[in-house]
Image 1: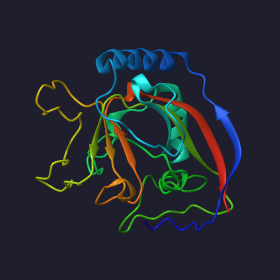
Image 2 (image 1 turned 180 degrees about the horizontal axis):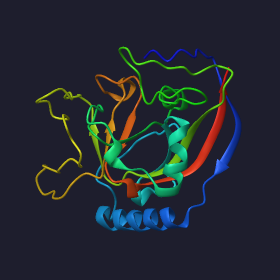
Image 3 (image 1 turned 180 degrees about the vertical axis):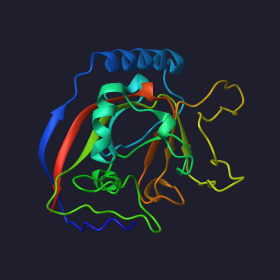
Image 4 (image 1 turned 45 degrees about the vertical axis):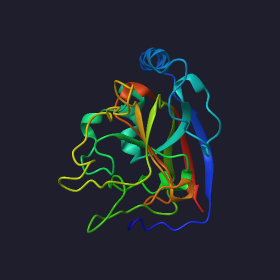
Length: 218
């Protein structure tokens, strides 16, 4: 990444709670459907999550961070996430990506005078300044029954994750339907590629953006 702001600490300046009844009802209905789909319990365990224990184990619901350019926050908190804007170049295709580590989410955060978006590589330029406030979304995410990817299979042309826009189908004997999310496993937990976990959903109704966390990089 060529994100220019170096820091040793992220210092929270304020937290704003989002109250959007339309998004909340949509999320609650989707979560209820996941609980019924996964009953009596999801087949895959999520394991330890840095942001804390599950707020609803029957749906594998967790609070997770989402980093972004702050210009996108008004639209997301009003209308919700829109998967049509997700990049097919994402590690696990065009999904909605979340982290349980705030410093990982910070890699995707841009604000102030910076118009960049996402994790930057190549010639992309970030103009974030250390003096400017940044912000990250802390979201409720209903993972349902997650597909856990330990040995990453790539997202180049022809690879397993290339161009994906939908959930992974279940292929184990006796299982039908799809997994409701993807967890890109970290090396600490037995993965072979990622230093830190990534959580991905392809249905925006599985996410409720509950808090906007404003912070400074110190």
